Amino acid sequence: MEIRRSQTRESRLKPSPSPLLSSYLDALPHALTREHAEHAKKAQSLVSCIIQDLVGMSSQHNVTFQDIIPILHQIANRFSALCLDDSWVRKSAGCSGIKIMTCTPDLGVKWITDREVDLVRTLLHILKDLPLDLPRDIDDVVDVLTSVLRISNADLDFHAEGAMQVRNKLIHLVGIFFPELQSSNPVVRQAAQTCIGLLVKLSGRPAVDLLMPHRDRMLVAIYTKPLRALPFAIQIGMIEAIRYCVSLDPPLVELNDELLRLLHETLALADAEDANLLGRGSPRQGSIEVTKLRVACIKLLTASMPLTDFFSRQHQTRQRYEALQVTITDFRTYLA
Image (cartoon, rainbow, N blue to C red):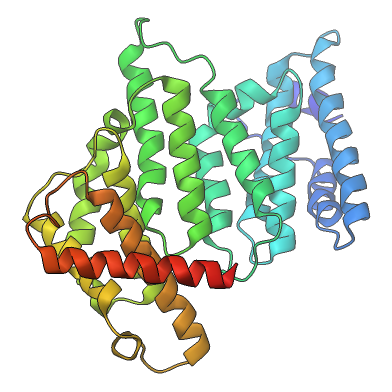
């Protein structure tokens, strides 16, 4: 009925869902956001069948795929809207809806390619908006995110006429993930690294080639902030971002005064007494954060050693650093 309605609509009129389609669109979130896992799974199966039936109608007489696109677009908008809701149940339901669209034959590739950037931003928003103490089902979101990237970048061709457009598209995509390397949320940092690594693999291009256009903007934001004045989670995120850049081959960062100053500050943080780092708050929680900070500092200092003679000229500093390494290793063994 909706297809026939759209075919008879005057061209000057803006497409809008009928009351019947609106009732379906309102019912989809209601079904997918069931608290009971078994109910939600049945709803996902039903929604998948509805979408497959819609796509299958394009093979009928007097029906084209363009007649179906507006309906699918309305459904997809509801999925994206769910991802932006506050509760995890609704975010998860929106992610499930996007997964259904990507897995539908004869629809997934074109649908993802046309909306790749919007889908990436929406799925990344889910991870960024989650509280740190809610890790459940996060792997599902990352899997859908990587599936979107894998499908839309499966056939990259840098030798064709549009090679420059392909490169610019990749650089734009990488630019979405690059700032998240310094996120205070470790889940977001790991997802960003995973997605950048996947794009590097799919393109066959060095990571530095894709990241270089965005390098200065991120490094300036890190170098101009005193680490000590920031909360532990933000300090860790910034240190981890620099470690990632240093660990690339070739390194993305240059050996300059700003990097050396940051390494000195990192060493000072790793070597500081707990009492000097901890402020008010839970002593136990603070101790855990301090330990995470020290681990991040040691990982950055270790990664920077091949890049600079920062330690070779300062024997006392190197001895302090090596002692810290032993302390962190002993602490990890104790926790294990």
